[in-house]
Image (tube, rainbow, N blue to C red; front, top):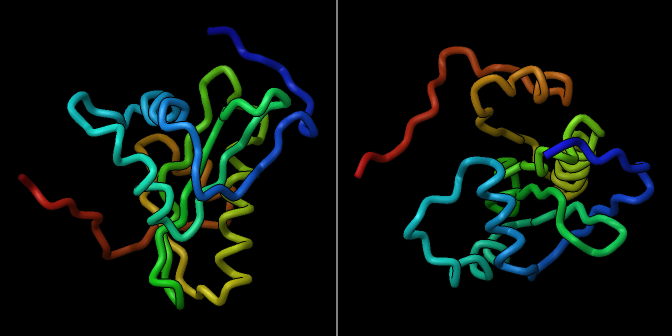
Length: 143
C-alpha cells in the first residue's frame, strides 16, 4: 500500500482500556505478531491487563498505531507492541507513541524502562533514548 501523508494534528494518541479487537489484531498482523489460532476474545484482557495502552487514531477514529506498557506498577516497566500500519510509517507516529509511553512511565515513578527491539529497528529506539543492554540476552520460554 502506498504511504498516506497526514498532518501530525490529524493523529491523536489516546490511552484506552478497551478498543476494537479487530483493529488491534490488524495492527498485530502489521507487526508480524499475530499467529493463526490465537484467540481474539483475549484482546480485551490483553488491553485491560496492561499498565497502559496507547492507540494512535486518525480523524475518523480508526486505529493506525499502538503501543503498550507492561509494569509492576512501581519501578519497572517494558514498552511492548509498538506498531504503526506500514502506510502511516515515517511520519513520527511511532516516535510519538514511544515518547508518550516513556513520559507516562517516568511520571508514574518507573525508574527502569526496557524493551526488546525487533531486528533492524534498533536505531528507531536508540533515537528515542534507549541503548543496548550489554551482557544481557533476551530469552523466551520454549514450548
